[in-house]
Length: 352
Image (tube, rainbow, N blue to C red; front, side, top):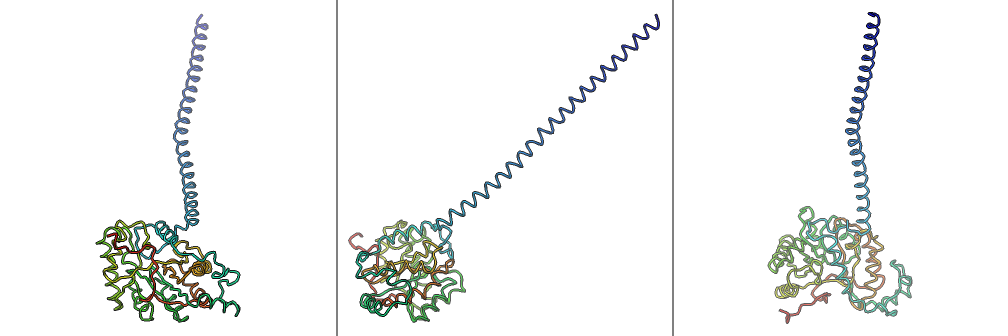
C-alpha cells in the first residue's frame, strides 16, 4: 500500500514538473514574441523613416534639376544686370523690353529694294564691290546710334577699346555703380568723345516710379553724381524699361513733362540685340538681331545694347557688328543735339 502511494505521489510530482516546464516554455515563448514585436514596432518605423528621407532627398534633387532646366530654358537666370540690387525681377525686365520692342518701326519689312536678305549681305563685312555700291546708295544717308545701357561693368573697358580701335563713337546710358573701382569708366567714356547719358541712379523700378518726387530724386542723384565724377552736365535720359513701361505708379506723361521742363531729352530704341532678353545668345546671333532691325528701319536706328556684368557676348561681338554696319554703308554716330529722338511714347502737354 505504501508503495502504491509513493508511486502515485511520484507520478503527480512528475506530472506537475512537466506542466511547470510546459508553462515556463509558453511564458518564455510569449516573452520572446513580445520582445520581437517590440523590436519590430521600433525598428520598422526607423527603417521606414530612413527610406522616406532617402526618397525625399532624391525627389528634392530631381526637383532642383528640373527647376534648373526650366530656368535655363526660360533664361530667367540671366540676368540681368545683377551688378545692381533690383527689386524688379529679371522676368519683369524682359517683359518690359519685349513689350517696348513691339513699338519699333519696321515699315520696310516687305520692301525688297531697301532690305537685302542675309544670303545676299550676310553678317560678314566681306561683300562684293557691286553689293557695296548698292549698299552705299541705299544706306549712305542712314545713321546708326549704338547705345549701351546699365554700365559701367567689367566689360566697359573692352567695349571702349573696340570703339577706339574702330574710331567709332557711341552713347552710354549709365547707372550708379557702387563699385568705386569702376568709377574711372564714367570719365573715360566722356574723355574719349562718347556721349555720357543717364539711365537712373538705382534702377529699382518700385522706387523710381513710386511717385513724381521719387522720379525727380533719382534723376537728380544720377545727374549730380555724373557731374561730380566727370564734369559733364548730362541732358540725355533713358527711362528704365523704356517710356512705354507698365510699372510706373505715376502717369508717364507727368514724368515726361518734368524732363521737358528741365531740358532733358529722353531716348528709347528701334533696334535691339536682345542681349538682356536671352543671355545664351552668341555674339553672332546678337549681331544678326541688330542687323535685322537696322536693315528694316525706314530711317535712322537707335540700337539698344547692354553693358552687363554677367554677359560678355555684346562686347565680344562689337567689332564684327561695327564692321558690318560700315560695310553696308551706315554712319555710326553718338547721340547729340541733332539726333532725332526715337520715343515709344511722346510727351503730350494737353494731357496735363
